[in-house]
Image (cartoon, rainbow, N blue to C red; front, side):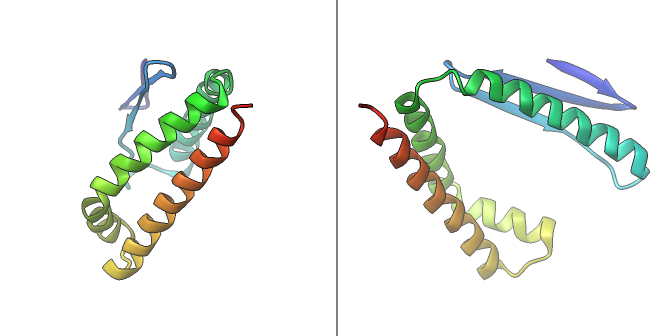
Length: 118
């Protein structure tokens, strides 16, 4: 789905069973508060729509998807850490810890999904 918000193109793709989650929206610093609020409202609406589909996926399948996403995050850990450092202004050691925290949480939640098989 593509939508034009102001003069910014937002692209959202949600395909739960086919494991395709993609979103891209560029927000520039020159936008005013109301414009940014409108864009974030769009993001919330998209997230709610995705959740309605995601919640219908059986827990074991969600666990499998989370494991795949987490494995990819493990493979991209350093790149993600570097990017977060640039975007957030944190020191690299701290962002590495943040990414590791996301990895740990991903594996934990995937484990919880696998437990719901029975």
